[in-house]
Length: 138
Image (cartoon, rainbow, N blue to C red; front, side, top):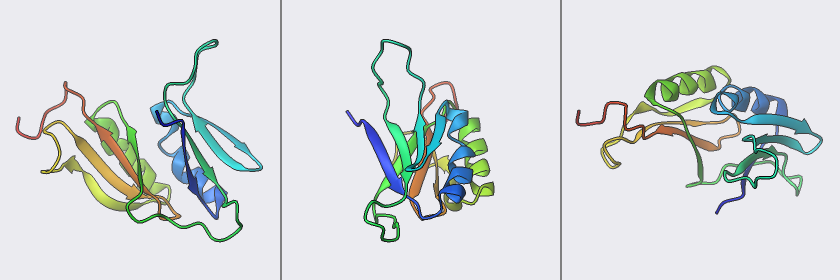
């Protein structure tokens, strides 16, 4: 199981604007400290986390942060409407479009996805596979 994911950022305030545009709408709580941003889903007392935390931090070696070619972090939304709304919010908060919301021929008929990059260049996917939404072939 993946415990957490970390992406680097040179401008934490810019990253905060971007990730705060959609992660709280997916249920994540954000805390900010001297080491960057932490996003976590709430965990009831006496239970272990089942979903990975997401961190945005300056690099540990002090060199500029860079996005990895082929690396991507995907966040699941409740439905297609939420994917569209969150993609739009993330773009308005400084992200850049890497693929408008919609179906992709190479994925399953219910996999609805949008792609973007955060201000540092990290690739992010927002997706839904809600069986109650229309499918690609419906």
